[in-house]
Image (cartoon, rainbow, N blue to C red; front, side, top):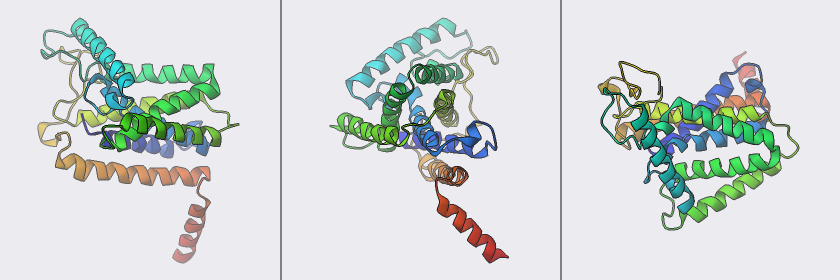
Length: 272
């Protein structure tokens, strides 16, 4: 797995890119409030697949609660791997980078969020926001006060949730947008894992060369090691730059930063 900051930033970068490049339709016409909530969900969801690893960043986010979820995820992932593996699949326990690292899991998480928000708009958004905001904060600040970080992260997540809920009060949200944000975040995680040594079996259960758990990854020369120089000095800065650029594009489009329009007009005036 890549490190927490890389995963969190990748979720934001992909969400920003998707919404910036969507020229029309619902995705291309999000309100600032919906975009920010979606960005938080995508950033947090980019950590979620690693819930299948007991010592991962995400499994330590909410202390005993997330540890319990991690144990359940590991057990289920092992069961699914043993049940569906073929003779050509590798001989491993299937706990980490198993079911939670598949497109099926991403779609399932997206559907759960969509259904929850549709069933109870205000309350569900707050609960979902709190959970994924916690994951996002934990990802970015993965070394923050390890002895007390569960309580601190929960507190920071609660503050962020209250502020966003207050800001978005009265807004009519499209539940499917939030489900899409979660799917986007998960897929960003898969892509990040796919360029590491182990790869990512995200296309399960589609059989590829006789393997239902075929690891998607580039040629060996293009793979990176987790936490290595390539990730920290090349991949993370590139993702951060992409996240900033695409976020600015979206902010300009939705009118969340009027000063960007003024800068653009001044630049055009100077050029002419």
